[in-house]
Length: 331
Image 1 (tube, helix red, strand yellow):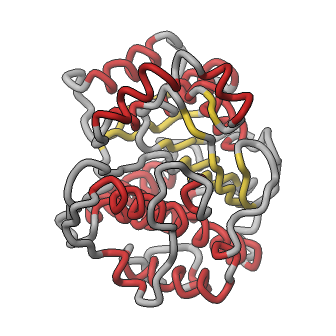
Image 2: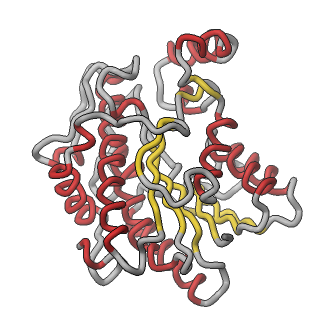
Image 3: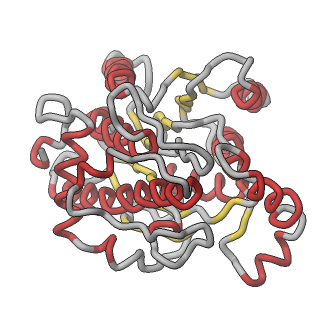
């Protein structure tokens, strides 16, 4: 199976080696790579463009997409759907929802849509992108790759101070107030978004399986591991985390892995993600993976009533209606 693979946040730490792996190992695919800033003034976009240049025959394009702007996400989805319909792009084979946001060093931020930025970038905008584009997959189906983290599971991440939880009032996920504990509250917003992604992914798979025309599309929600070389540890984080990365996590990773096997490189995680996106790993399967292993997700994430409530709210937040998704039976 070939086709178009969309990767959001394609100039990120995991994404650039993933793109390299995709173009080297699966060159028949067309890559649509989204970034906030397409100019080489962004050093990460420049690295992405240099990566693509290493594969002169690559079918790859860099597209502008800001997930903090919901109308822009809908416009982008409409553009991709039109290009597939007009055969300017092959049918979709995968959407890799890689882009993320966190802020562990500052007060909460809000998007022009009025949503807290972490939940919008990580979850809501990807909901809009996926549900708008399900009808652009080919007859052979394909794969949705969503990203969670061990932060979704209370007690599993050392940065956790307030355990991840989906509140009864779901709209409270869209709000946040300044707090003196910027690290603790910032990580909690991030962990909540990762729990929301996982729960929504379970519901997505149930609806896809029930739909005769879409059941060949499968969703995998992966915890790719704790990436010791990720830029995330140097972006919107307190100084001590940068020191921990520089002087402990990176140089001592081989030793630290003996105690914590979740510690790994972005390149290793990127290769896993591409094998999932191309359906080479766990072909036709669905659900949650910790790295590339089947393990149970948190008990809270498995509550189907709450998954359904979050499904309904996520569609509302993402401005999804029966008129703009192929998964009409779910709305």
